[in-house]
Length: 549
Image 1 (cartoon, rainbow, N blue to C red):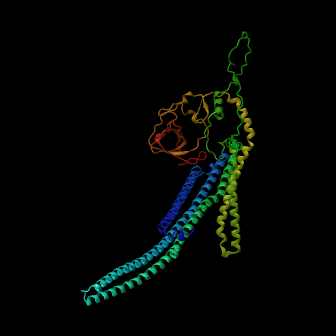
Image 2: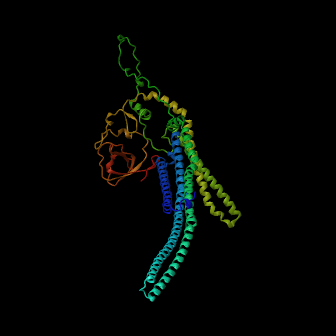
Image 3: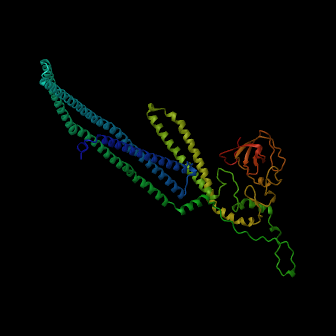
């Protein structure tokens, strides 16, 4: 079916239809734009979600549990999935939305051109019709005038009273009007013939061609919509294989969760290497009771030298009973002797591995420098061999330092691995002493004590015996920071320390919530001062008992 033949008289309706077609195309383009904006927002939100739950971590904080590793693998796959949503949005913007907007502009220009041609053709036909109509009206008017002239001539010709001149004048007027009517007739005939020819041409050639062009344009618009519909789906279909791989990766990560492996990691992380404590023997305090023969009981033989020393028992309890309670704070020593055997062994092995890798790097650098030095010696124009010697010497010095560190750590590791059996036997033999430890509260260092006066410690008036147990240890506590005295403090109570305003002290124990901080003077004197009286600066890394200002 053709618009040019079937819709020859529907110019206005075709004008409206083609405008509707362009509006519909632009509406679909707006739909695609909103869809790709949704994809962009979705991808952005997914990436923010991944970033939120996958924060930056240091090397020591890297997860080892399979459940954590699987979760981070899922986050990585989700991040890739978000990337595919961005690809969908980009492809939709380029292949669908952008293409539709460019095509819409072309359609508007083409439609405007065809409608202008149609209006021009219609205007030309209207002009021809006006010319023909004017000639027709002129012919009609001249014929009426000729008829009037003929009636006048006939009336005068039949009138006996009319003069000859009047009759001649009427006759000439009749002749003039008849001649003019004939000319108008010929002009009207010519204009009518011209109009009919133009009208045939208009409705059989010009308008059909214009309408055919509009029809072709509208059909191309329809085809273009179909192509963009297909492109809209193809963009989504292209990313489906990659999205499927992302989902498969998530499923694989879920399958990699191993509860037994996670449990073994917990054991490796927290295993101390100590043996469980042995049984506590019975303590018979009735040895000094005098029994008579009439009691019918067998007295326990006296053993004056076998009574345990309570102080000795308490001292042992301080070193052993933390296994049952709070583990005491220990200084961060270089040889890691403050750690349990198993944890110390693992940390030492990790340190040896890191030092070995650094040593290998230094060795590779030394070999490279030596090769470069040989090249310079053979080809002096390339460089001075002597300029490399300081760097080579520095590298060799670093290697020696690293070897020394490795040897030192290997010695500590050998001590740990060789001392496991002796540690176990010592642990078993210690049970004959630990049973003398009384049941009391934990001291600030984590050991037990029977001094009930230490159960409550609150400022501003400390108990006279409050800090006695804190200074029983032979090894000094490590420095963990320093402080500056904001006010003077007289230190009149036992266990406290005198300080002057602006005096700088070493912090060896933080405030445990009771308002007191344990400090040490440069002279070595230790004690507690009010936390509110000092300005404290904590060190991020402190080794052993190294002091500083």
